[in-house]
Amino acid sequence: MKPIHVVIIGGGYGGIRAMEHLSKSSRIHVTLIDQNAYHYMQAEVYDFIANKVDMSHIMIDLPSLCNSFGLVSFLCEEVLTIETDAQEVITEGQRIPYDYLIIATGSRTYFPTFIPGLREYTHGVKSVPSALDFKQQFERALLDRIQAQKNRCDVKPFNIVIGGAGLSGVEIAAEMAAYANKFYQNGNFGCRSVDVYLIDAYESILFGMDPFLIRSSHERLIQLGVHVWHNNRISEVREHCILLDNGKLLDFEFMILQGVFVPRH
Ligand SMILES: Cc1cc2nc3c(=O)[nH]c(=O)nc-3n(C[C@H](O)[C@H](O)[C@H](O)COP(=O)(O)OP(=O)(O)OC[C@H]3O[C@@H](n4cnc5c(N)ncnc54)[C@H](O)[C@@H]3O)c2cc1C
Image 1 (tube, rainbow, N blue to C red):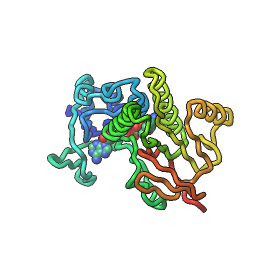
Image 2 (image 1 turned 180 degrees about the vertical axis):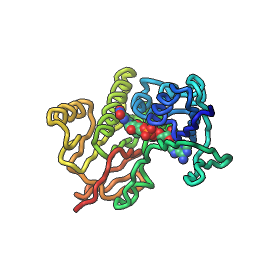
Image 3 (image 1 turned 135 degrees about the vertical axis):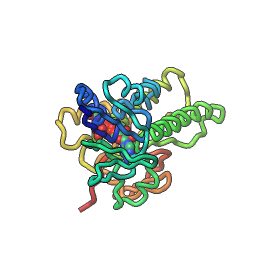
Image 4 (image 1 turned 120 degrees about the horizontal axis):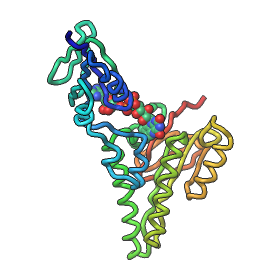
């Protein structure tokens, strides 16, 4: 009997889990399609940025992963459209027929348009290239500070702004501050370190979570030297500068968006 053909679009967490389950049946042939030849382990990206692991720890090769399962094929292409009547997935080069289709294409960072400049001047870490770009800029800033000792530490501040103090924002702020602190202690470097700012419009970080968790996380961030600016709503982002509702301006070199921003009522 001809196997049932299941096409899965997206080799992220959802797509891989579906592939793993379906491949247990000898009656099902799975085709996994992803625009990249690797699975990106987004949840591990902080360790990558903080140099605890290298790039190989946040990527899994999808062709070899698929090979290790039963009746599974892998196709590295971007899906352009789906023709549901014809039951076909369309990529640039192919039309792939399916009996059943699973769409597991994930999500994108939301850049609300009511904050001018947010999309143009901030970054997400939702892809390997953007995480790598951020990590490299961060390390370059650390090196600049070491080199600045020959000019008596005459180097402009390097501020990293993290917009949104939810779980991801808090985690990334803490990891980066901890990494920068360790880096300076190890090398005993004299010049000023980078400054990490965590900014959120709500009255506390981790808004809505357990009060003990909020209090202890806040204290730990302060210990690490993170500038925690809650109750501060970002109203505009310019190139290398943010403007807050209360009129404050903050220069930055790099801004990461980690939160869901709500409009002011
Ligand atoms: C920095 C960060 C840290 C996180 N930490 C945690 C954590 O600690 N714990 C936790 O539970 N969650 C965490 N998350 C959330 C978690 O990563 C997501 O919930 C999860 O990745 C969603 O899985 P998914 O399969 O839906 O999508 P994804 O993992 O995003 O996978 C989608 C896949 O679809 C592919 N794709 C998209 N469009 C196309 C197309 N047109 N054609 C072909 N392929 C396409 C993409 O290349 C990608 O491989 C974190 C997220 C981020 C960004």
